[in-house]
Length: 407
Image (cartoon, one colour):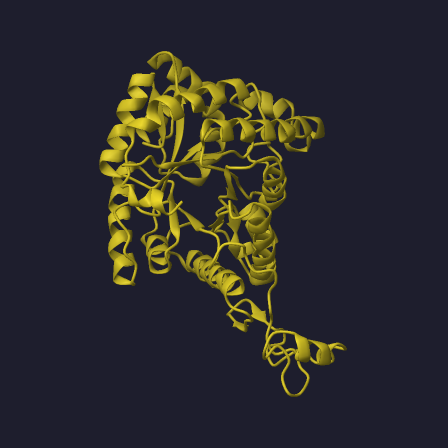
């Protein structure tokens, strides 16, 4: 047996003494000195995680977080910087919000990152659920934020997302492409780009068919191609959508579950069935990624205190409005709700061992993503918890040996 691969996911979250302090210091997200300190401290954390044997490090794409909750507008820049500082840890993001992105630009950027890391790179993609920024940056495609409610607008988001992901993969894997999507076309106009002065050069030395017999740019050759063949591993963020699981399973992508264990257990079995019906031979949990928000305290009271100090603000004032299905109420009720959510897990070290063994008895995933609300969680506290997880908890978790062979 082998251990699951651990991914450390950080945003960051600017630290405050609760929401009232965040209001007094508004807007925290524009605090240049704080971001400068955090972004450099972040690199120290990645290096520490690498020494602990953490498999991967990642961040997020979110924009306009003036409150200072998730200040992570450009994962690629951070990934490139980490690539220059590390040697063994895998690097990526969860992830590029594809319905707001140009798929060719993402293909180019991530291919370069794959080369910079010598193949230690993976790509995460997401649908985007925050209208404040998704509707702005996705306006050229008519993107609206995902609500995962099956509505017409939610389906539109899914359609754009899946179109862009398919185009991303084609740009990586095909020598040249023609995209005739509902919201994105290449070349543009689709009939070909006329009047390109160096068409004769491209026709003679470029990709086959890139220039047609009338001298028009008829196909697009996206360069460079990734270092990994056929392309870097692709992770897809999902909460409860069966459609997302099936999209991943049919293509061999890795669903990243922000879901309770019961739902994950059902999803990994559904993924395996659908994937194997589509020509794959995946074992149970293979290519699956389970997300949790952990804390390891000195006592159960200390665990509750960490939830209050490090997670309650964002859970109450940011996650809650987006996900009304989460428990609501006063602070005590919310802390209890976090523990009952099956997403915020831990307690004492023994509690943590017990809960993770239970998770893997039901949902043995190849990957585990740990999210800490750093820098609200002080660096020294987070690294102590991460070290305990790697040394004391991870050795108790088993996945089939053949998954390690892929490394």
